[in-house]
Every structure is written in C-alpha cells, then in structure tokens.
Length: 194
Image (cartoon, rainbow, N blue to C red):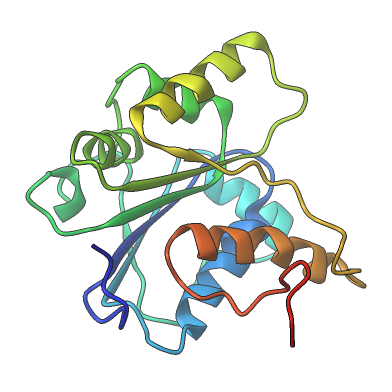
C-alpha cells in the first residue's frame, strides 16, 4: 500500500535515449514540488540519454533537488534488489530498445534490472514510450509488459485543457504520470466540479 504522506516513498526515474527529455525534466521538477515530498528519488540515464538531454534541454543534467544519480552500467544500487523498498519506477521517456529488453527479461543494465525487480516484486512500473508509429514488435512488447503488471502510458498529450504553451502540453502527460504513480498532481481534470 502506498504511503499517503509520501514520507516513505522511494522512486526510480529512468531516462532513456528516446526523444522527449522535456517529459523527464518536468516530471523531476513536479516530484520535487509535491506537497509531501518523497523520501528518495533515484535517477538513471541510459547510454545515449544524456546526449539527448543536452540537445533537447540545452544544458547538462543538474538536479536542483535531492535526487541521486546512479550509473546504468553497474548493479551497485539498492533498487537492483527486491530487498530494497523502492515502490515505484518510471521510465520516461522509454525507448523501444529499453522497452523490448525489459519485456524479454534481459537485465543487461541497471534500468532493465530495476524494472525487472519492480515486475517480480509486484511494484509499480510506469513506462512512458516515445515512439511513432509502433511496429507489431513494439505492440507485443508493450502487451507483454502490461500482462506482467506494468503500466504503459504513452507520451500522448491531451488537449481538452486548452494548453497555451509547449510546457502546458507537456504537463498534461507529466500530470498523468504523477497520478499513475499515486500522487495528487493537481492537474486539469475533465468535467471536474469546482
């Protein structure tokens, strides 16, 4: 059961080489802004994710909050084991390569191993694919992950809140991810009664 106060929540945010670093950038900011902050945020970059981050965000990764970065090439991280108490992992953006490796149980790096741990321990794994169009291989991998307990949340913005800027549009996806992770996003709600 999720801790409603967030004080014991431990989150892993994995950022892969798919385009869409802005989603991870805004998501990390939103996690730091929660009224009740989480206990720990771990960040992992895949091999090419940092280059894409620098290209799309315009600067090197630097977290203003308390997130701790882990090396994707080693398993020396607490969440590489089921004995850890990390309760949620978000892969945002998720490349189809990473998605495929996780779907097929290939724990060949820390991201794939941490995702494997989330699935085997029946914890929350949210995968935010950033790809278009999908091939049948992509669809089958996402189907298998869904059957294994993962939540597939494509980086598909919504428009019913009438977003005015790119940031507004990005936040429609980020707020949905925050909701799926069990936090209150305070984002726009369809047909919400005020």
